[in-house]
Structures are given as C-alpha cells and as structure tokens.
Length: 179
Picture 1 (cartoon, rainbow, N blue to C red):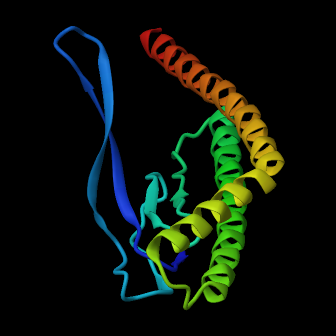
Picture 2: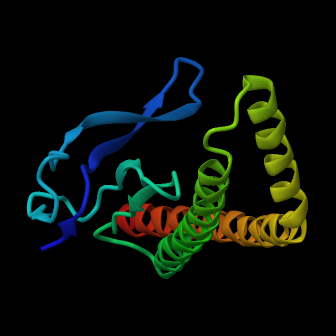
Picture 3: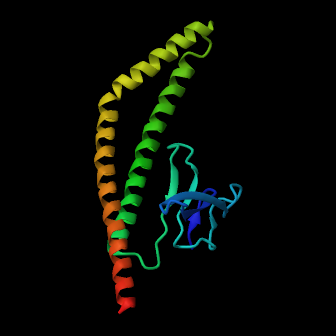
C-alpha cells in the first residue's frame, strides 16, 4: 500500500463539452482519504489512475502530488508522469531546504534582538535582515528560476507529446473499429 504522512485529497479531472462544441476541463474536489490526525496510515483505497494532492508541506509550502497512472497509459504519457513527479520532487526539495535555512537564520536573529525596546527599531532590523537575505541569495534564486523555466519548457513539450500520442491512439482505435 501507499503510506501517507498527511491528508491526501481526491481530485477528479472533469472534462465537459460546452454548447459551442469545445471541451473544457476542471478539477473537482471529491474528498479526503486520510485524516490529518492519522499520520502514516496506509491509504489502501487510493485508485491508481487518479491524481492525489496533499495539503501544503509544512516547510516547503509545496503540495505533494501523486500522479495517477492510466490503465492504457502510452509511453509518452508515462514519460510525462515520471518527469512531472521528478520535477515536483526537485522543486519540493529546493524550497524545503531554502525555507529551513531562512527559518533558522530568522530565529537566530529574533533570539539576538530579543529584549530590544521599540517597535520601529525591531522593524528596521527585520527589514535589513530580509533585504540582506534576499541579496545574499540572489544568485541562488536566479539559478533556481533559470532551471525552473528550463524544466517547465521540457514539461510543456512532454505534455504536448503525450497529448499527441493519446490522439494518435484514439484515431487508430476508431479507424480499426470502422473496418
């Protein structure tokens, strides 16, 4: 079974045909499978073909996603699912590390300035801390942003390729049925 450390939500992609003939899709919340008060509970009733989304992680603030595997998943769709999972984990690890570093530095500063009188002085010190933190991590943030853009362009490409493989499979299936 799959073991979860927080509540997972069941999200269903709903595709509907509008009166104009065009299709629209939306995500619909269907419920929660594991209660927050029950960490490490095996979620045996998860359906493998549905995407599940967790609440935001306490450090990274990133929602974990368990991408569902379609029963008739094409090779391109599998590649997309695995890449999206890898990208999501990379993003989660980066922000978890970054936020933990920030929290520790901020806590250190708050300990140092404990007892300083005057709200304006505390605000000035905190403002200087935020400014210096951002400036000292500028290269790191710029590198992350550059990598994130590159990874997302690949994700878009893989999404288009997966959609194309699904269309080709549907067309081939309908042609073979009409023979």
